[in-house]
Image (cartoon, rainbow, N blue to C red):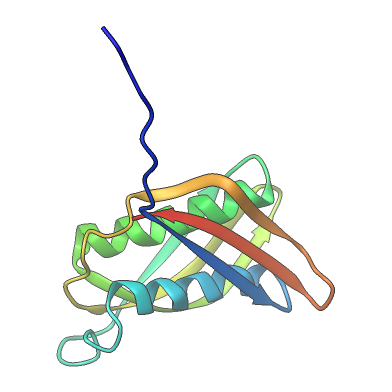
Length: 134
C-alpha cells in the first residue's frame, strides 16, 4: 500500500468588507449570487424568501456556516441568492432573511474550508475571508 498527496488548485478565496459583522454576511450573499447565477436568474418566476439560521463556535466559523447554508438552499431548491435582509449576529448565532430568484445554480461550491477563514473587525469596519472549495 502507498499514498501520496497531490497539489490541487480548486479553490476560490472570497474577501468581504462591510461596516458591520452582519453586513459581511450580507455581502457574502451578494457574492454567492454572482458566483452561482450572475444575471441569469433575473427573469421569470417569483422571488423566494427564506429565513436562515446557523450556529457556530466563533465568528469565523459562523461565516463558514452561513455560506454553506446559503449554498445548500440555492442548490437544493434551484434558487440563486440575491440579497440578505435583517441579518442579526449574536452569541455564536446568525439569522436573517435571504431573497432568492429562481434559477439553475451550478453545483460549484463544495464547501468552505477553514484555511484562512476570518470574520473580524478591521481598520474601517468588519472583514471576512473564506476559501471556497470549488
